[in-house]
Amino acid sequence: MKPLEVRNLTIQYLTYRGWVDVVSNVDLDIDDKTEILAVAGESGCGKTTLGLAIAGLLPPNARITSGYIKIYGKNTESSRVAVIFQDALTSLNPILTIGEQIAEIYVHHFSMTRSEALEEAKRKLSEVGLPDSYVNKYPHELSGGERQRALIAMAIALKPELIVADEPTTALDVTTQAKVLNMLRSIVKNQSIPMVYITHDLALVAHVADRVAIMYAGQVVEYRDKYSLFNKPLHPYTRALLDSLPRVDVEVRELLAIKGEPPLPGVFAKGCRFNPRCPQVFDKCLVEEPGLRAVDNGLVRCHLYA
Ligand SMILES: Nc1ncnc2c1ncn2[C@@H]1O[C@H](COP(=O)(O)OP(=O)(O)OP(=O)(O)O)[C@@H](O)[C@H]1O
Ligand code: SF4
Ligand SMILES: [Mg+2]
Image 1: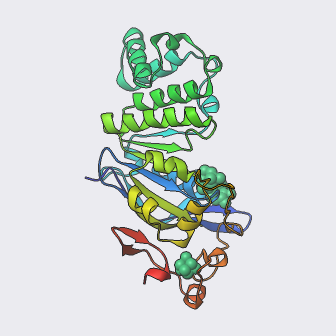
Image 2 (image 1 turned 90 degrees about the horizontal axis):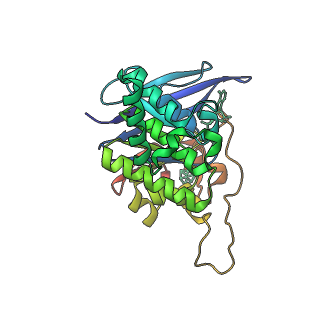
Image 3 (image 1 turned 30 degrees about the vertical axis):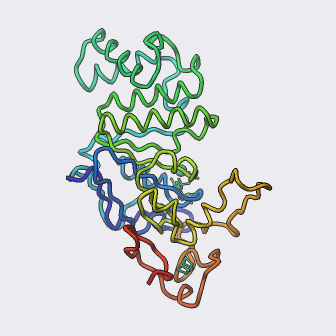
């Protein structure tokens, strides 16, 4: 059974403009227990909404209007999905030590005694590269990177079937980001806990992911293995995202930002949703919405590949 199967998923939010689509007909898969699927795209494209849906944590003003999510064949309510958010300070309890917070999971979910649970907490801390003594520290005594590690220790203490990590390192400096991401990657590979890794930063995708889904305006526009995507991006939006990455081999570091703004939810262009910003737009793009088509071992949503 697949760790993750998302089919034809459409999610709407109730806003002052009524119910609007934020995620539209999304299909995604994780086939293997050691796979990291990155979901990447600009702010507002629906990444977090998709991640919350996979974790079964959509807010009350959201509704799923089509499709389904299966985790090892089960629905989200009967699955154990751990979520790691960007901001560890708000996810950790400031008045409990790190050890107490991890131990609590073992006491409540796995019926351990307090001393067994504390021993287990130390083991989890060492798995994320923190020393035993950190069981006695409070969240404010840790650096940003250490707090994120503590949060990851809590997430894996739950023995999740799947991890959703939503911009888990955005608040950290570049070197700390790389260390925390390497650690997350080795947890996925060594403990066989598959991960959906959400980010707006393609440089991090290159570092962490196995497969990549590029989202634009609520849709998956390109879905391929990492090496194919970075070697030969197919969708004009993916190309624009890659062109906008800072490059070390260019003398003057010009950020080729993508012109225009992403659309508001529900206010999408007719035809291809990317057409107002696409450098390769042609007549068909203005009238007909492209479907996801199989190209080069992956899927691409663009009329150029019809
Ligand atoms: N609870 C909510 N109610 C109504 N609209 C929401 C809610 N949460 C998010 N939205 C809107 O839905 C759209 C998608 O939001 P989402 O947070 O999923 O995007 P994102 O891709 O994670 O963006 P970012 O990179 O900024 O985190 C945005 O336009 C956002 O304003
Ligand atoms: S369908 Fe047309 S507008 Fe959309 S990405 Fe492809 S070429 Fe650009
Ligand atoms: Mg988000």
